[in-house]
Amino acid sequence: MSTPSTPDSTTPAGDASDAGASPDSPQALPDKPRGSRKGLIITAAVVVAAIIAAVVVWATQRNSSTEAAPAGGSAAAATTTVRIGTTEAGAKFWPILIRKAADQGITIKKVDFSDYNQPNRALSQGQIDLNYFQHIFFLANYNVENHDNLIPLASTYIVPLSIYSEKHTAISQIPAGAKVAIPNDDTNQGRALLLLQKAGLLKLKDGGSPLSTPADVLADQSKVSVTAVDASQTVTALPSVAASVINNGFALDAKLDPESALASDDPNSSESAPYINIFAARAKDKDNATYLKVAQLWHDPEVTKAVTEESQNTAEIVTGKSQADLQTALDKLQTEIEHK
Image 1 (cartoon, rainbow, N blue to C red):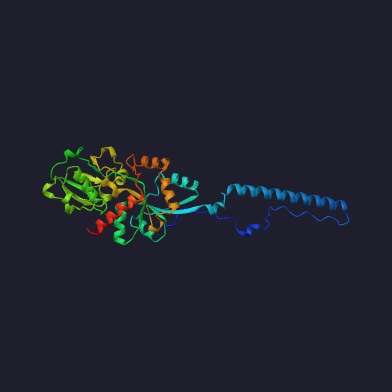
Image 2: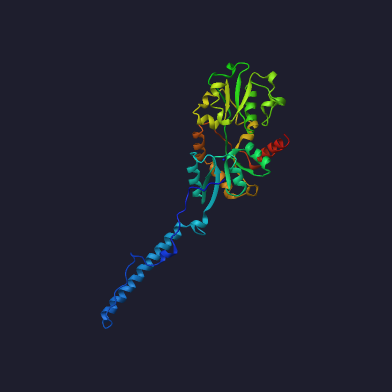
């Protein structure tokens, strides 16, 4: 999340050798005695009839082929393939998006990744055309670390980050001195700390930012302390801590009820802009009409309905954000990361 080959295959056209006669081809008429005028007449009539039949078949096939092909060229010439790298190849919206793209002459090829470090490299190297797996902050971190310039082509959705607990049913019940688990990755721990600050559980140096770390927690002004763990362990940490800040995907995978969260950040707030998920592209493709069309089709109501339903209605579809808006958010984050 290396480019494994797509499982899709294309049925090859008939081989040139198929043009020869086959066992099912009609056999030639037997010769007639040369001295029989009647035989010559019959033979000529049969040949003419065969020629007429062949012409009718050819004309029918030609008309059928012309109707099947789009104006201006063959079906193959009218189809454009777009390779999209993703860590969410099993998501329910894909068959809908693929079908709608096909109606527009676009063939989408999913390229599945299990390692989040790979889709951006594959995109940069031209092994895929777009990727769909990350938010703006993740892309900013990648660009800075790799001296790259991938861009956010278009927005998709944003999901909340939430606080869960097995021991308490309200933030107010969390006792002073308690431990709270947070994700330890660069692109989510700052968001988790800001959420805990908003919930009144801790204070951050200078008010905090998406780049805050546990070192920025003002212990003497905070009700709780934090324990940073791998994001995938924030669920399993629940029995040993008072609460845990858990990414939406891990929470849903663990069958946690989003309604049971003690608190969540507001995905519609301006502070959540770094966490808008996107289609990412190479800078040279920012105006690529086909890629922009794919992103537009993702916002089709049938597609977004599948996205929100699969997220148990936690996903907020992001509209009204231009490519320039997304790029501004990316540039701001990259500058902050570079000067950290």
